[in-house]
Amino acid sequence: MMLDVKAGDEASFDLLLKKYRTPLVNFLYRMVRDSATAEDLAQEVFLRVYRARQKYSPSAKFTTWMFRIATNLALNSVRDNRHRRMQMSLDAPAEEDETPIQVPTREMRIDEHLVERDRAQFIHKAIAALPEKQRLAVLLHKYEEMDYGEIAKILECSESALKSLLFRAYETLRVQLAPLVGQTVAHRAGEGRTP
Amino acid sequence: MKCVEVSKELIAYLDRRANSADRAVVEAHLKDCAACRARAEDFRKLWNLLDELPVHEPSFGFDARLRQRIAAEGRPRWFAWLVPQPRLAFSVALLVALSVWMWRLPQENIPTSAQSEEEQFQVIKDLGVLENYDVLSKSDVLSELPPMTAPQPAPEEKESQKGDGG
Image (cartoon, rainbow over all chains, first blue to last red; front, top):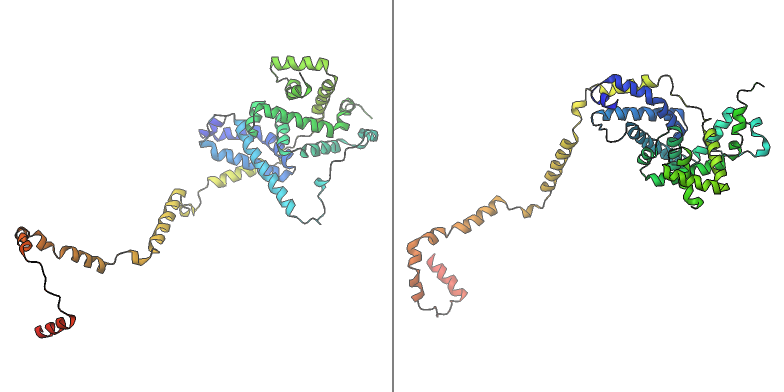
């Protein structure tokens, strides 16, 4: 499809946009955790793809190339944001996102206290608390369903290093989300049940 | 195989991307290791949990905004001709820097036109004599002259001689 775009076919760019805008915005949102920033970054990715269309050579998969651009932009944004926050006064009240993850105890009977939105928020925070590279690895592996070769290229590491990275990331999430992990089956079973 | 060694291949085994050899190794380990079996089961549950995360859709105006930006990029700007090309700009800057450097060099190092004329005169003033074959061929006669033994006149005498001559 990108080769058609290179040849000047504008309709192919529209198809490309239609196919990848949601995964891209989704990925960037999960990295930066801000809708407006995620959309701005996604637009920047598409713009860069469009600008580079004449120079594009299919040496790597298009998705690898595109997500590599997205990853670099996301990391820059996250680092800039962190830098800005560090410059802020220590007296300023902490943002909502800054609250530490509070793992509910099993005795609290999570299903009674957490509604769907809260569960998602809880998962979001656990993923956001991962180190940058682990977070990227999980997002690309779990949500973009990329193969190990592609992810390794995007993260500029070996496949072997990636496997270790993924294991450490999922192990951290397993511990952080332990109260919810135990409830997943029950939660899913209760989804279709009428109260 | 140890748990640490298996852990590296565990994720690939669970998402069914491990090759058959690695798969067999992990399966053999899981049969004997209850801890890794429990961890593998937890990972499966964790992945189900992660699926609960809702998809974040782009906003309604996403495509329109992007097309506007692309259209704005494609439009030629009226001042575009004023924006220099990088190579040209670099060359001009280099040329200017060189000119300034040359201009600021110490002036005494550069020979003035008067100086150079004098040097040229010194070089060529005896050229006619040196190029004259008759003079050069007869210069052997000079060697037959007796050496100068007479004392040099005192400076006062020189002055008086000059006065007489004038």
